[in-house]
Image (cartoon, rainbow, N blue to C red):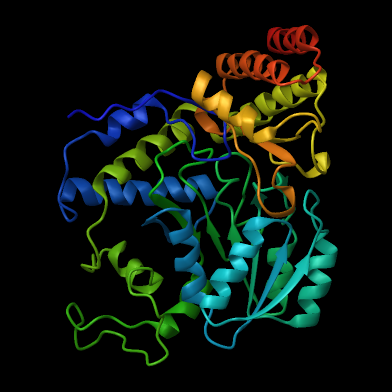
Length: 403
């Protein structure tokens, strides 16, 4: 029996459609994890990740696993039992940070914002200075609401009180500018299956020497690969697989035999990063994400739909749209997927059933995909009771692309 996958137009905030060149790269032959040809690819991926995060951090490498694995690796490695952890929350993934830090044994402090809004950096810094935590964790791109949390001042403020910043940039990575060094951020986790448009299962991240020195206090190397000089901390990082200190050895010239690296996902990561960094260019990528999002957002507004949330602080790679009161949002999603092969997302928590989340991440952020989506989406909405200005919306989109 041959596996057959139905083609989809994926307009969700992840996973995303993948450039065929990335898929082709992933179909190359398997190499051994210590084959010189493969370790060369590993080193090149580290340099690509540095360039993507605009950092000089030595420790810039991917973790095998979905973005949650990357988040858990960073949080488990820096948060010890009893550590104060401060987490500003503006949506579902702030709650995930709380969950991960709680499981790591942290003493959690939160600052909550309304879903659909962001928190002012001044308010975050004021609360942080009051708590004086060891770790500050915040979400940059909150896809549950489509908001982009400002964070250019938080890193420097955290350093002044000796705190470490951990940034969940899973959904914003490669969709918006994240100058890690300029913003003085300690550890930042990206995502493969968002604007990078690579397969899920590998997570690029970066952290600085200050962060590395702190987590190395808890380093423990398993007996099977340890030498007489290996670290054996009693207060060790509880996860073995997601222990950043051992992964540092794996991605360094030491090449600690920690796990079997995913060769094909590294091929895919390499191709996806190279296409953006060396072919498209970071600045052009960010400009295109914003252009496509603006055209889609304004077209949906022309259609007669209401855009959700604080538009001054919106993610440039997705649009959150309020579901009309006379429309069954889940029925529309079902018809789109099952009859037209188009996938969009609903939301979570207080936003469940109230908004659709439409992704424009990476490869799908192209004119022909946007126009195809608008045409199908307006047709399905009209069939389900929505009163729309379809002609005006499509005219606007075409004119916007022809400027």
